[in-house]
Image 1: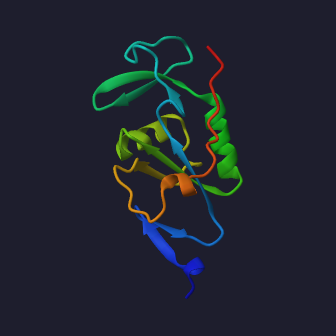
Image 2 (image 1 turned 45 degrees about the horizontal axis):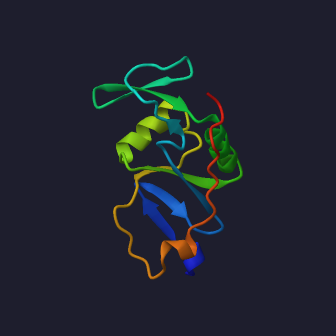
Length: 133
């Protein structure tokens, strides 16, 4: 069996590594924009996200959400990750109705172990500024 045909299991899902591309997307300030006071709805664009008994009112970043959906439709495996942890990423995925586009939700790594510096392998950042107010 060659490396290209090896299957790995990540959080209970079987992943075939052969010919798959991955998009890793952050959650906060990438898919959701945080207002100065996230506990009061700023405007009608804010959505309510209940988490750990607290309601947050955050604005979806429409451009980046659309980009994520487009990548998923182009056969990318989509990974949501967040410094807020796996549970926060899963809740955001659910509230933004991205469950049909996202393959995995993870916490951002605290450490990495790699022979290469991330600057040598980190792909292009596709982040788009939110020009809507």
